[in-house]
Image 1: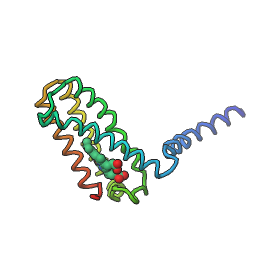
Image 2: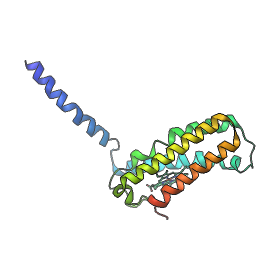
Image 3: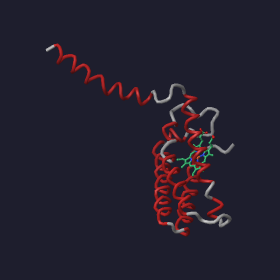
Length: 152
Ligand code: HEC
């Protein structure tokens, strides 16, 4: 009987532990800011390095582009966990990220969808297709920045 009571108490505790573990992903608010900005810096690096190929200034190496897009795809899911509430001060994050959370989430989904398309295109090895998908990703960065990032 005693064991059962303890088990019940444990079961009641587990969801609480889970919830606090999710919140405690970052020890300090600055850590969340650093995390999201670092992820966005990496995204920008891996996105930007494809530009010379898209512009035809550098020959298209399908395998290299494919490998880079795979990295980009992994990175594209990362920044969003770092947008913890009340962390906009001193950053380029607009308050709308939190006041219009659904819109911000939709902008992420649009971006990740565009990255998925870029991934499919890079697997095809067809540069024209890659170029179109690359443009769509760029447009999704801009759309989110226009709505949710301060110009500084
Ligand atoms: C869903 C919204 C969203 C998408 C999509 C998005 N960004 Fe951003 N980005 C932001 C916000 C918001 C900030 C400001 C973050 C801050 O200051 O803490 C930011 C910041 C940045 C920064 C500055 C990072 C730093 O060190 O402060 C770069 C660079 C950047 N984004 C590039 C990109 C590129 C390139 C893409 C597309 C390939 C992209 N972003 C897609 C919302 C987005």
